[in-house]
Image (cartoon, rainbow, N blue to C red; front, side, top):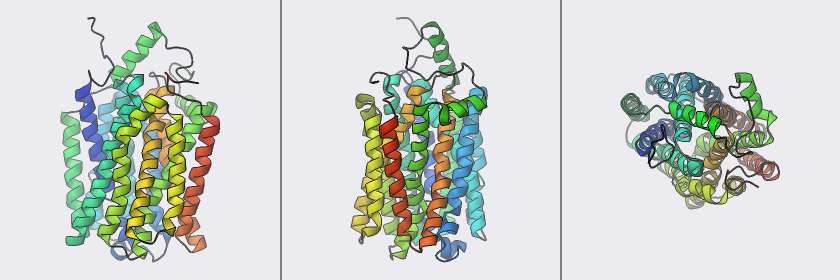
Length: 425
């Protein structure tokens, strides 16, 4: 059998795939250490003004703005220097975060730590996604993104749950410091010792397509080597399908911003304990993470559009219902529903981008998409905070988010054509 240099497929590239899964799990643990303790103790431990939802959401806003920008930057950088150096730079930037949490005299330090976290996530998580798109076939993109996001968001959930338990027994700051520094140090070591560079796979695939072009309509038409301005315009507004995916990515982050910052504060105001808050937010993240093991492959079988639209409407229903619940068990059940909705839409949006983006500029296209997606943290968190403060009720933030998800899902339903290369309309 003829050997194909840089052949695509999970089976032949299983070692690189496992290396990428380990990295994204560490990335999830790093963001997850802030999911339970910091929002719940923002007033008592870090000096946030009582009842100020806007101030509380400031650390999510900072994270979203920086991560969104760094997604774009990392995508462009990775096509010049490779995926592995960008990953390592992301972990180096993360090293001060545990120290800032430990020593923080005010909430401003937590906001500053989240600026660094945004750089870390924009570089490190982006590279795990891009690297997977480099090494899999078109039929495996849903499976690959499902596994990637499963590993990442399982890390988010487990870290939130673990730190909730530990902070209930030990000093919250010491807990976050030791947990965070251990995770970041191990991730940096693994990135240096065991992460396969995948940029040559993308370049080889692009070269093969010059010799044997893909069927017409498989990829969005664009320049062979687009400039930064060209790729940004193409993904943001010039192509209707890219535009639909970009707005969808941005709006779905409203849900995660809500679950990250407002839900712990909402539950604390309802007298839930740190352990209960950890379980409720953890169930959301764990359901989201684990469910992607079947939602990713599902999109390879039935196409991308149905899971995306279904996920948006499930999230809209769950988020809208959350403030009406009154018990820990009902909040937990709704968190599971929202997690399933996120699992249906989240990896499928990435897979759809991978379907449409040519391998010659896939890293950059994914970077632009992830720019808009993670800017949704900032847009959503700021808007949710302002609405909650203006109305005097945290519940208004939930209702705004539910409405935004319903409108965004309708946009995808009406505009997006099926992107799976073997199931196009």
